[in-house]
Image (cartoon, rainbow, N blue to C red; front, side, top):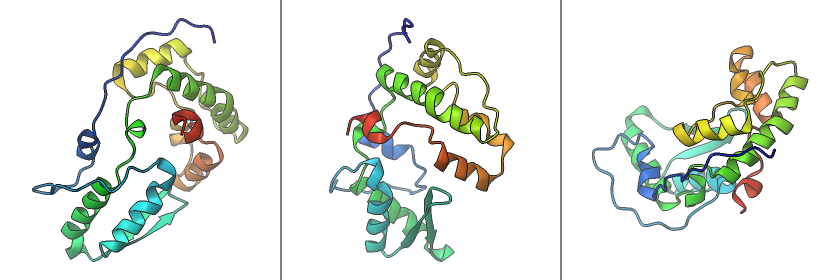
Length: 182
């Protein structure tokens, strides 16, 4: 991959930016002290424990890749406030919510072309031809969203359960320690 890649300077986002991306639907967001920043690998576990301290039980669901929360409907406002408090107390470390650098985009592109795409195709799905690396980086630098992702390309070809299994078997991103250097 000796292509001439476009130069771009990604914007820098703050913790407040990150928190504002979630729809907490609260009239006022309280000031919350940061207890510590967390990484992607521990996020589910830390937030589930924090929410338990706030009186809400949750369980990680490996099938969906998310957390299942159970609480009475009349507790929605209290749940939302607790979630905001936990997210603000244990925010992701900034590197996890910044736009990807050119170096990271090269890693993601290589991973998707060399790992994800063959894995998806081995399972009988058609993900199409990847764009050039230059086009991939240019697109992202202009829109901060990927131009092509083999997993996204097969969404209409499978049901939800099969897609979750495909995501487990054919990860769309390299391991976090490789991508973020943590």
